[in-house]
Image (tube, rainbow, N blue to C red; front, side, top):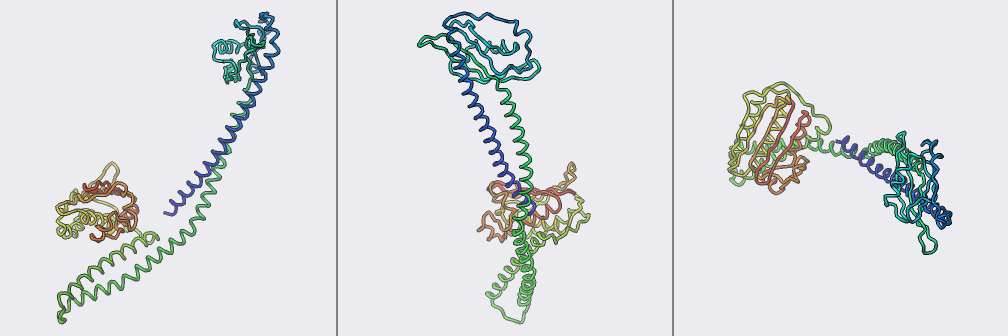
Amino acid sequence: MFARIRNRLTFLYTAIMALFLLTFVGVSYFGLKWAINNEEKQEVHMLAREEGDEHRETLKLGSPLEQDTAKDDNNDDRDLGGLMFYYVLDRTGQPIAEEEPVPILRSPILMKIHSGKIKNGDLIIESFPLSDGQKVTFMLTARDIYDGPQLLGTIYLGKNVTAYYEVLDRLLVVLCVIFIIFLILASGAGYLLAGRAMVPIKRSFTRQREFVADASHELRTPLSVLLASVDVIEADDTNSISSFSRQVLYDMKDEIRKMSKIVHDLLTLARADGGVLNLLKEKFDLKPVVEQVVRALQPLANDQKVLLELVSPDTLPVYADKERLSQLLLILIDNGIKYTPAGGSVTVQLEQVRDLNALKIMVKDTGIGIEKEYLELIFERFYRVDKVRSRVAGGTGLGLAIAQWIVKTHGGTIRVDSMPERGSVFTVILPI
């Protein structure tokens, strides 16, 4: 139990630290990316304005550019496309001046320019592949060049920002590594802090468990004496006892038995929490044990006018603690009878699950059922869905907690399926 709580606390601490680290990584990365992009955008716009101003006179003259392809023939893409390029086009789209990138990028860049997707003042970021599989990233912008109100042409300018994005990618990798390292350290620190936080809880729980165990143990003797005293008074024929007194004695005996059962259950749970109770496993046939429990509860079923049935194969060889399995069956069947109205039925069904090499125990009733939101709570100690009905039926809220402990100690599982007014089905799977 404490290990599970400690693990949950560790997970909570780690999740909180992970949230802070993720926030730090995200703010650092995207903040730096925004700052670099903003600075580069301003620089690209400034370069476009300067280059446009320089080529305004050329556009006034209207002299088309003479293409010099020889200068490009010996270029390759080893410089990742250069740092900057530009094309100055007149109003008709004829090139007037240019400073081109490497030849491999000329065609895709011109296609992007002539596609009309880059408008005046726009700035886009585009990646182009190189022959060696690398990619080069440019910031592209367009700026119209005017002579007063007259449009002379347009300059298309691009700046190589590949290095900046590579730095950002490397920064992201570094931040992710730092995130993982600090998350591991945070998990370790969270585990240590959770352990320290559990110390006072363990101390309090130990004291509470010892108190419950000691009090339950000390109460057993006076309760046994009280019960024996009532039996002696009832058996004494020499004393004349009125019918009222006999009823009082009968009620006293009934209350003493209820209190004795509560004390016994508390002592069982206290010893189970302390690891004092050990299972005494042995090989035996479960069928006679189940029949004995059903016979013991048959009078209660008759009083409640509930049909109690047993469905079982002829033999059920198991390796388990006979006394604890008998207690488990008693708890489940007794619950089924108590919460089933007159005319209903309780069916105890046992079968072997050969695929799992396990024993399956099902206790089905046609009783009041349980709301879905309460199904996970009914195995908690002293929890009762309908407290008024539970008091009338004599329930204490400890039976199912003991049943769950018995099942888990045997390495099995227990679950409940229920619908209000349609009954409940408790299913236990135990390894044979």
